[in-house]
Image 1 (tube, rainbow, N blue to C red):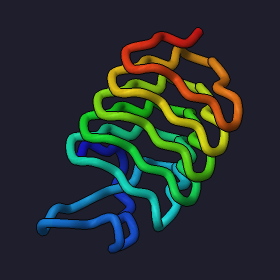
Image 2 (cartoon, rainbow, N blue to C red; image 1 turned 180 degrees about the vertical axis):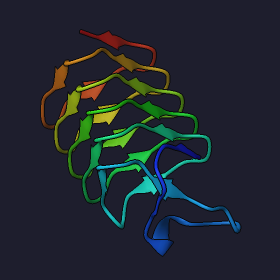
Image 3 (cartoon, rainbow, N blue to C red; image 1 turned 90 degrees about the vertical axis):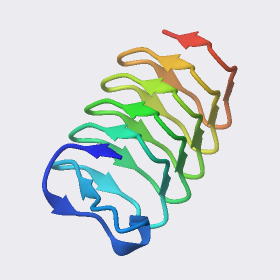
Image 4 (cartoon, rainbow, N blue to C red; image 1 turned 90 degrees about the horizontal axis):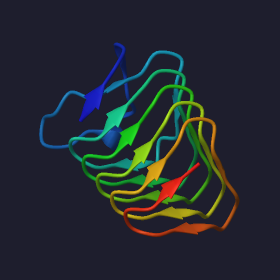
Length: 113
């Protein structure tokens, strides 16, 4: 995983002797699942029950609501907000400042403005 910052993440997010660091000023729930190769920027909020797929990118200032899923290789751009119980498909791109409402489903490869 690629993280910015130096504060160690909760041990529940660590696997395979990998050192995991949380971004500066970010809030990542201890039960969040973050796939290998994912990149998390600064000032990100990842709430409880969230799953981030392999190689996904969550840019600075983004917020991912409870129980949401971000697919493999998806990109959540800066300051975008993903509501609770939302699903972001593989390879989808959520553009800067976009808001995905609670319970939404974003198709694989879609671009949300």
